Length: 181
Image (cartoon, rainbow, N blue to C red; front, side, top):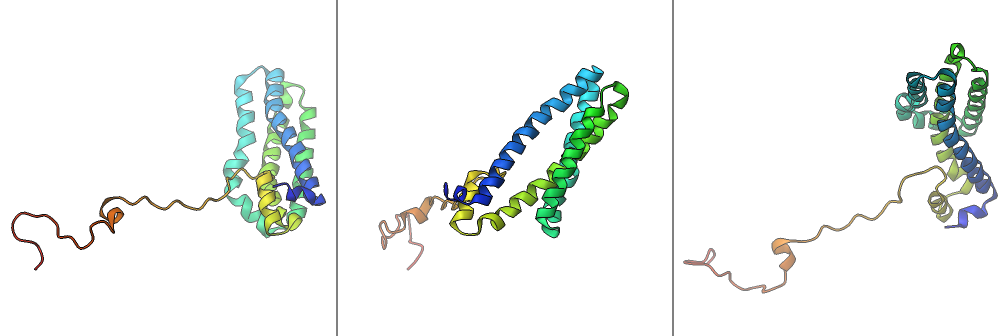
């Protein structure tokens, strides 16, 4: 399980994604809190949350396709730059008249996040390689929330097929004439 952390590039990627994930989690709380502090409006705070999650709804189904068609490394760098620019715009929103900048920043941040995630997840095999290291990297949870695939269970036998060998060759007890000669 710890084999993937022996690869230096994967360690860098894993630590960077952990720090970025912490920052994004704090940002999900900080931006609506700032909007509420500036405007005092619950409606404006809700609109901010809607703008944060709108890209996931609209671009989410297509983000993996875009990450496969474009160069993943360049896409990850570009989305990080867009993310930094979007968050720096929030610093200029200090009055209720400039709150639209926060909406724009939330939309940009959400778009960058939606495009970054599949690119980073698909880039792991290039960093770690394939085989046991890739399996170990998947267990380390580098952004992947899926459970490992398990072998499907065999269906439990019930009824006559379960008692296949018991009493083979016996005639069934029936009233009247048997069904076969």
